[in-house]
Image (cartoon, rainbow, N blue to C red; front, side, top):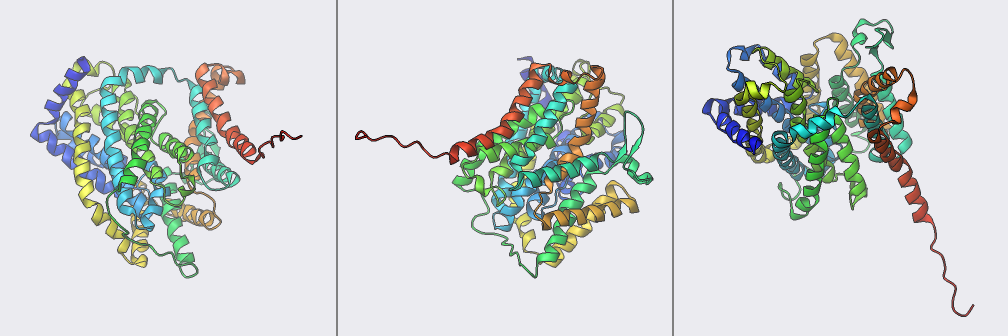
Length: 504
């Protein structure tokens, strides 16, 4: 009841005209920059930090939260329509959403994305208010061994979720893991795979890799194959809105994505990539039409987008309760707190309740604003597909280049964009899935860090990785994912026994 009363008080703070204006500015800016490849919400918050120094703390933090949510919404638009993720958490949406858009169903794809994000954001925000203490307890129970097991679970499902060949999926994953090794080893300080190039000491930028392999790789592939096998893009076929069948196929993935996104986003090493990836894998396993995955399955858009938005609220749990940022945007928001002399943590809820609960309540308002802002624009966004292909893909190249320069202004980063774009083109041409590369690049360093930390704590004893029931349970799930399909194929191919007749 205390949480309910505090949330109502937060709504009264967030509904003040000035704070409503800040929230509207935030969601509008977030949606706009989310559409641009490479310019994510973290960069936008960083650019606005100096400008908001003289604003009141509640207003500026509410605007930053609006940018965060708006960036999640906007990233799905470019992923679905242009196969160009605005930020790494939107790359899973591109897999099915872009196939739907090319088949004339961009409207339903954008609609299920917007509504799913709204549903997930509302549920997760209420969960942030009422379940934060429980989720923090769960997060604190995760040690290095449990985090490593969670990463192994994500790696294991690659073969089940991407492509028609498990070997090709794993090959792509190991390419990503190799890219993740580039840079300085944080524990020893030694350079790895940098080849004497100073710019590689910081590693491969995830944004550059995602934009290069998806946007640039797709553009090169279209240019190389357009004359040989023209791919006709149909801007609109049928209704722009979701049909009854689309609703029936979307509502369960929305809820499952929310249940994945919020708790994993609340983990100190969670983030949005793991739940979106796991949501896609689960929806493919549970779907009654698994053959549609890879061709434009609406479940593959609904679930990951819900997980993506729910994880955004989950990220605020460790930030507000422990002062622990678990994403780049959360780190920028922490800087926003600190520029006003505020330190997030348990004491913040008692020392500045208006600020904290106003921020939480503003997420509810931001979700309503984003739904009202995005649904009427679906028809306008879909018309992007009617642009002539040379202009459309030329524009993608321009925005990809500008986004990369905005995130990291250097000639070397542009060179990396070109190299990774050629790699993405080669993988696309030879039918290797691209998404596992990005997954390996993101999760590989995290998995290595947690593995080495667990072994350091146990003084090199590998049995420490399987000592807790939580870690054992995760490894059991991994084993079921690997063995389950093999057993199922053996059982399904086994002929039924012939019953002996009564005459014998």
